[in-house]
Amino acid sequence: MFVGHYSVAFAAKSEKNKIPLWVLFIAVQFLDYIWATLVLLGIEKLRVIKGFTAGSMLDSYFHPYSHSLIAAVVWSCVGAFVYKTVCSRVRYPCIRSAALIVGLAVFSHWILDLVAHPRDLAIYDNTLKVGFGLWNYRNPEFALEIALLGIGMVFYLAQNIMPTIRKGAVITFGVALTIVQIGDTYVPRNRENRESAAN
Ligand SMILES: [Zn+2]
Image (cartoon, rainbow, N blue to C red; front, side, top):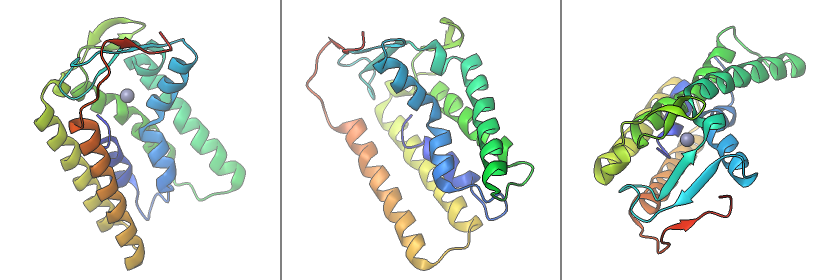
């Protein structure tokens, strides 16, 4: 799952909760930021295998600290706590449920990854791995990503009052994300069985 994660950010933002959209963008990809950092540090392991799945060449075979279910719950709590703390420090309006929404946005990453990933998401540590493997089906996976993004954006545009220029910018951003997803899903790469530098 890639751009589909952003659907949750768009759908979660409302005039009532006042959570900045950029905060929700970070929240829905938070687990992947932790993952990328830990891979670069050599703590989590990744290898590139051509044809690993139809939609991805990344075999992320060891990522218990960013992508296990337990880790996702912990990071979701961290996200909610940090949001609540920062809001009260800078006196930003924060309704009671806002921190919970941020936490759920962080956790949504794991749920959507569960749909797309092959069986590489551990329940805890590096054991009991799950994943529905939609990445093995290129077109359905692409369709789901774009459908989710579209639905999220419709919710966002319906729930938030904004000038036309901002609406145009949001739709342009959605088109850009769609192009990124087309590149990610359909543009072939020529790397074969190359282990990442982090491995
Ligand atoms: Zn992920």
